[in-house]
Every structure is written in structure tokens, then in C-alpha cells.
Length: 337
Image (cartoon, rainbow, N blue to C red; front, side):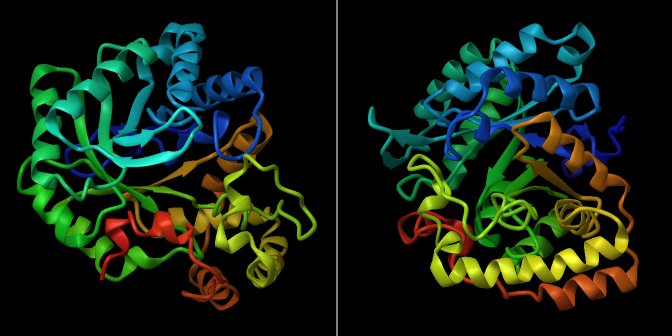
């Protein structure tokens, strides 16, 4: 049983060392098993993982409905301790296309109203815009979430994929609990400016992509065929020579994992955990088997020699290819220099 021994920044809730990213249960990684997804959410809650992360645009509300269904079927104790982290603002079309982002104050309230209905809850624990709306100052968007906090519909304000300047501007408006951003052995861009900034301001990190969408999980193979509805079929890191080079890094990491008697996924998650107690990895497990493997990472202790070996096997900047296609990279405030 994982205890709530970390917090989301200095103002956020107490959480376990891991959170559960639920996106893949509805979208972007091919078809998922609804019953197994709900069973996985229940298993996570049973194990002490209370933080459930979603977005209102994940399969156009499907993921929120799934979480709502899982919470209704959960034990009263698990329902009580569950914490929801919700992203909003991404605009979709009926064919699933992406149409930009909307951070206007009126839209913030509208998105929240629909999320509360789909989740079947009277409040959202952490609420954040998924990407900065370039046409709306972040101060206005965060101010609107602060209004929802004052009204009792939201407990804490989060940020997602924003750079240091935007973090400071947002924090000047209202307390920020955490920044959700990709962070893994092969995605370490936050270490230069973003991580020092959030630490200065007392803001936590919820790290998604800690296994780089399965790329560094130890389970992805060179000959794997991806479905057309799998995001990774368009991701630069999963293409051609990039994939070969990245899986070479995984092979190097596997040698260290075998010496430790753990899996590749466990050592990759343990590395993120070792970067600071203000960082909470979000595990995108879609099955109870993968969830159990991830939970095992909490008990993996990496000493200085282990960390040096991991660093040598997977040096900073060694990944081949960007973490998103070019069109999506353009929306990342966190990548602006």
C-alpha cells in the first residue's frame, strides 16, 4: 500500500509517490478494454494511488465518463480518497481533429461544468489548461480557475507544458499546486529553466511520459505494428532510424535493470522518482499487470553508482526525434526558448 507521502507543491494535496494517467484507457494508444480499465483504476485506488489524471478532450469526454463510472463502482473509502486532475481547453472536431485551444474565462467555466457532470463529482481537485491559448493571457485563464476555486468547484490550480516565464506570471495571480509536464530519462528539457523555477516558487511536478509512451518500458519491440489510431504511429521517436537508436538506449538500460533484478520500466520510473520528492510520476498503465510493475518501482533504490550507470547508458539529450510531431510541438509553451 502506497502512503500519501508526497505533496503537489507547497499548496496542493498530499498524494502517493505515483499517480495514474488514464488517457490511454480511452484514446491515442489504440483500442482499450473498458472492463480492464475500470479494474485498473480500482486496483490503483486499492494500492493507495489516489491521483487520477485525465483531460476533458480525451476521446471527447469518454475518459471522464470512464473515471466517473469507475468511481461510482468503487468502495466508499476509495471514492472518498480519489483525487481528480483534469486538463481542459483543447478543441476537437467530430472526426477527432484538433482545432486549437480556448482559455477564455467564459470557456473555462463552461469546460468545468461539463467535466463535473461527466465525472459525477461536485469538485475537481486540480484543474489546468492543457496548452496555453496564444490569444488569451495566462493571467486571465488562471484567474478564471481561481474564481472556480473560490466558488468551491475546484480545489487547486495546475499548469501544463508551460515555460518559466509563464509559470511566474501564473503564480503571480494565484497559488499553483503543480506543473504537469513530460519528464523522463529521454525527455529532460525541464532541467534547464523550468525545474529550478517551480522549485523556487514551491510548485510541484506531475511528470507524464515517464516511460515515453512505452518506448523505454522494455516492452516495445522494433517489429511492433502500431494501429492507425495509435498516436505513436506519428510520433517522431517511433519512426525508422529514430526508433532503432532509441531502442539501443533501452538495451543499454536493460543491462542495468538486469543487474538490479528489476524490469526496465521499473528502473526508468525509479530514476524519475529519484530526481526529487517534489516530482510525482504519472503512470499510464492500462492494465493491472502494468500497474503492478509500475508500483514495484517505488521500492527500487538507486544509489549514486546506479544513477551514474543510468546516466552513462542514457545520457541527457541522447534521444532521437522530437517528443511530438512538429504541429504539436508548436503549441508547447514549455519548448519556447
